[in-house]
Image (cartoon, rainbow, N blue to C red; front, side, top):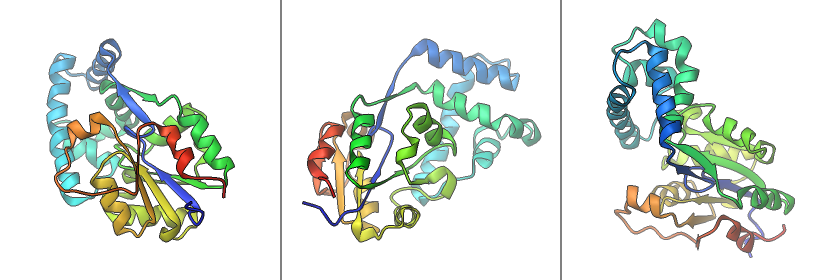
Length: 242
């Protein structure tokens, strides 16, 4: 089955990895943000204000299916009350700390072995993800020693467009050197991921059912995938050797 698919693109958040709450780790990141910026507010108070601004920014990105450059995110949306010349040199550190203050991203236990096996089976692999910062996902892939298996990374933070905009799916196919009609997408969002991949002409969409995703973004319309999985390694039952 599906022997005419040559490229498989994966989402990351809640598909390849899940977030784990670690209060001491998260507080340390908030404390470092405050220290870096020289604020006199408590870490929790300061970051609560940042979180409110971040929610406003996320609403804008979802409504427009676009994303601001990282520099603009921090200077315009997150820290407009700080001089831009002070913020710009700190952006890399701030971005890393902002990810950490939300929790630890933990790789699913079966991801690495499944990715390696899919690559051995002859598939071109890629990532299509709505990422907050440019280096977030590449660094995470390097951390877990799987970056080398992915030919194409289509990340919203780099491209300035977000799922479900079909352009990010089309760009991924171009980067992989594959026709959309020969591509499959694996995600966790039963609306956004299906809508984007279908609009781009992908042959197949697989959804990994994730309760955290459904709680956070309950589907407002019915969108049916071609396959549903509950564990990441079940992809091996769907995509045989090419």
